[in-house]
Image (cartoon, rainbow, N blue to C red; front, side):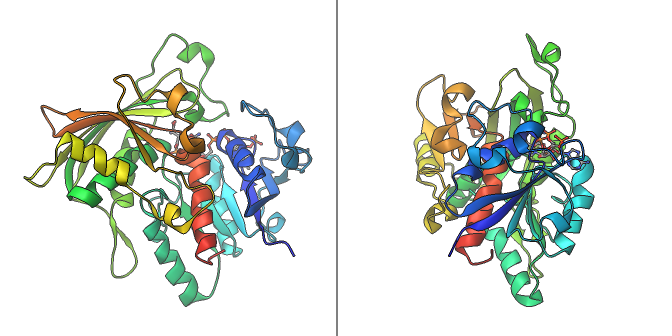
Length: 357
Ligand SMILES: NC(=O)C1=CN([C@@H]2O[C@H](COP(=O)(O)OP(=O)(O)OC[C@H]3O[C@@H](n4cnc5c(N)ncnc54)[C@H](OP(=O)(O)O)[C@@H]3O)[C@@H](O)[C@H]2O)C=CC1
Ligand SMILES: N[C@@H](CC(=O)OP(=O)(O)O)C(=O)O
């Protein structure tokens, strides 16, 4: 008898979708079962439909799967459906899947602000999944949507959450990002001519997402099981696209609300000591260490540090005092792993461990 769960991937041909294929191909709990994309790709084998852009080759288990259209009827046998759909189409498609009783874990922005949808970065707020658990128990029906965050937000909230857990409220945050081109997706993506020898100081909607999503992720669950924003924290973001393939780097400054400030060494130790729920549950993709604190003056760097623990860990470096705020540091996260597909998989692993899949 097979004990693996059947996984569907929507948007399987895209930047996030390709990462799902790689991460799910050898997964101990999930089996690649259905792949969906647009009508341009449907009806063709995955190997023929996809313009593969990963450095690892296409996994054997995906090559001969025939890509289907993103209709719930095609995915009814799936235990979980991961969505890497373009946000122009994700809203209607994911709604249809949910209403058909399917469990959808989405990378798209469409439902992140919905009051009843958990917005989860599994290294920091997997406790928000408890709302889903309670709802499933009460309503006795399985269909629901859980959203991953924006990719640069995923990197930011992990050290912030770890420091809040140890030292209390943070009142002010500034973050300046240097974001990889894979974050812009493949259809059409960033033109080589635009990014070569260049930095683009604007990513549509990104600053607003960092400033708002951070507050939902680090917020609390209200008595009625809605999600309350962390309103006592102000976040100011500036976002830039740089000529890096994968890995978002972020320059962060923070100010604690409390008058008793920790030392730089205490901040570093709190980051190193931080342990998340997926580690405690023994989820197969959980990083060995959530946050690696690097001591070298010139780290973290995208090419050298993005693949720590298979892209599931966050790297923090250059932790030092800030003359305007309290502390400043650099954060690096793999935007298509912990910033996207990997987060979705860790959420599913957590649900699986808790008997919700
Ligand atoms: N890239 C990143 O780092 C992150 C991305 N996200 C979000 O994840 C989602 C996917 O992003 P990304 O992979 O970068 O985007 P891509 O542009 O690379 O991929 C988009 C996918 O959507 C499919 N698609 C497009 N139109 C339709 C349609 N009408 N019906 C069904 N499928 C369709 C495409 O299929 P086809 O090939 O057939 O056109 C493709 O598989 C987006 O919502 C994005 O904002 C979230 C976090 C990080
Ligand atoms: N906008 C991010 C990718 C992303 O996460 O987008 P969204 O928040 O729409 O899912 C980038 O360009 O790097």
